[in-house]
Image (cartoon, rainbow over all chains, first blue to last red; front, side, top):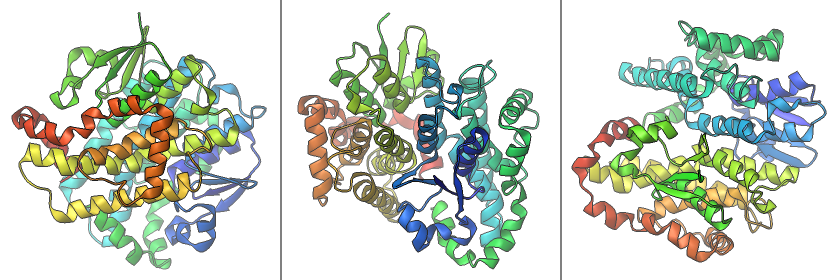
Length: 242
Length: 241
């Protein structure tokens, strides 16, 4: 099995973490997003959507982290304990509910804050207008509040007392704005406690290792410059503001 | 207590859940929620779904939101025919892949076109600037291209030979811009052929019934009272303008 990954990307981290944590054998195929490798000819043969993560299992190619995670759980029952994607009807529904909701919520708002804080200023040379930044931060805050009050509530993990794919996907998305220096856990004891529980299940070392790139985004400026990506990213960023 | 499904058939994800439940003869009580009248913000509905969105279900004391999760739940609980959510590893992966991709692609772009063409002019009293409209259309076209070139290719349905949740979710989203007067099928024979296959698989009567409201949207919006819809202004300014 080949996993095409760039650990700057949240969905790549969740796929990587599940595979490493459960011992699923795979080859790490690096796709350097900061160098635009997702638009290269080679990766184009893997995925026409030009996004990571992507999985190649023999001849079978699959994109979308949620689908890849579900595939791995199903394919390797001897390696992946059942709690990752519970077979109990209601528990599984809670996992599915989160996995569906997060695309346009945690993921969308966390990514936006990441772009606004770490990428846009580097590419355009100016900070994002205050009004837009405040609006993005407000959206993130609201989504985090909703995450806590609906999905975490009083249980240890999203689906109950055991960690699942939902927590994995949640944590990698929440870490994205954290990587820009925005500590969303500050002043949030319940959220921090959940983070610690998830980290413990995954393993501190593995968790930290997979988040190393995102926690060092100061390097992005130089990386983009070295890779000639600045001109490439400018129109993309303009579109974000249209 | 019977299964309650909270629906507004203007909403794409409500249509997929409605069609799925009716097609599979799942017994349920249709609880109408009028989104454009803001009924999702009422106290009662808040107890069903604090996200204030439709569709939502209440099955005994179990509440669930998110159309994808709801259909996966109903498929399992009522043991619907396997083709809806195949057990074959790769076929299921194809369905899951589409269900995941569509949120930030066809759903987002189709919804935006609907708002830009119909609802925003009505609520804000202005036409949307051409450059914004063009950009939104470009995005929708790119998504439709991926539906055809990646998800369908030369297969009759997304997962293969039979209709699945993926096709259902796809079709209801693609019908949204159609409801705003943009016939996306017109220049796309492959997509049109697929639409007819899905319509036949679901049952043309059920399909047409589920889409009656959205296809009458242009007329309906004309008669709507814009003053009652001002609650949507901040959302519109933030998301679209």
